Length: 67
Image (cartoon, rainbow, N blue to C red; front, side, top):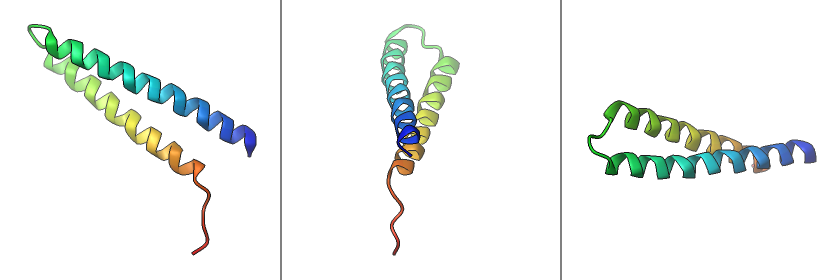
């Protein structure tokens, strides 16, 4: 379980880092003229996918509780 938890934490770190990097790229792209709407959409979609993956992995770290 510990190795699995460590692997999840490492993956979370990677995904969060990529998510932050995409923030920077998106801001720079929106400041550029003309704006490449297709590239902007792709980056935002990737960012949303990363957010979903982070949420999924975070939920795996929370132990199941018996109600």
